[in-house]
Length: 399
Image (cartoon, rainbow, N blue to C red; front, top):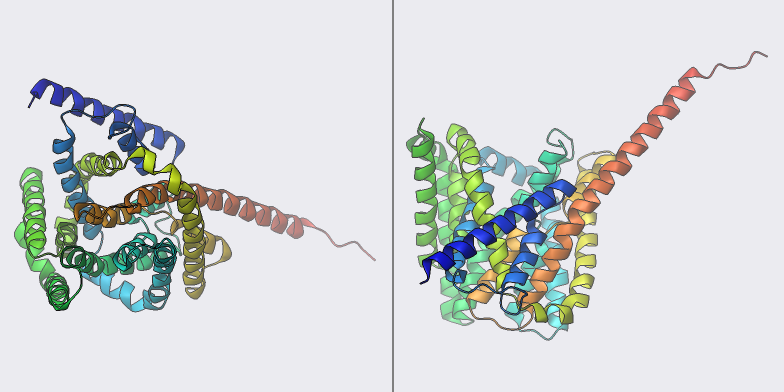
């Protein structure tokens, strides 16, 4: 290994990602599509392929996925999960229909049933990371529609906790009685771990908690990696293992962990998205771009409908319904994670390129629609306010 070249390449990649993150922040949209484009540029067939650092980046990408799912789990306490499941299950059940466009597209493209099932998962799940950032940036945390959106995301994330192990087993074992047994084992392991996390999460959190930031960060990071490794060994998926560790933590430990882990997540998360782009042959994207655009259009419409209906059921006003509807559009980390499983299992074909293009389109379109809905809603509110003031100041003419 040529260490100087490795360090130069890694430094260049990370500085490049930093510039893209600043650019995304400047224009107020997600950095995920820019990281994917960077990966396409640095991969085989790109304008500047990496020479020595790709293997190192692959390990960093795996850590990035683990940290993305860990921080996602940290956002949910046991009370959040049970309350959101109780109130949001009707809309959550309807939301499953968002898998249909992907499954149907896979079937129309003549793909194998398993590939179509994977594409269904990719079209189903909204990017919790992008939604959380948009809600925070736009200061919508206290809005009436925000709990509705969070309920849908919680149900999606828990669905992924079951879906990913099943997909991993099927990718490895195919069909048959052996695969059925392995699927049952994987689902049982996830269910048992989730129940233990919900029941004994406070005890686990007290054991992990430390007043030392250094000790707490090392404890949580080490546990997440260890549990992810055990989960991978049990054919459950490392990402799901990290997600369950995050759910198990609650109270002060979870609150402190979110701020401590976030910088690591941002670094390795950027590497994760860039690495996925590295593995996509740029020349494979143009032939499927039309399909990706059509699938993205359908996916955006179905998510908007689900968000609108869910907010309407909760009694949210028109402006809030549009905010909830547009927040659901973006796709991101889970969609890439599903495609990464397929690539790791050796599935060839168009799935990887189609996922990259699909996520790229909706990771850009989602935040744009959210901001359009926000600006439009503000203008409508301002017009209504002026109209109300004008009506109040009108004096009836004397007869």
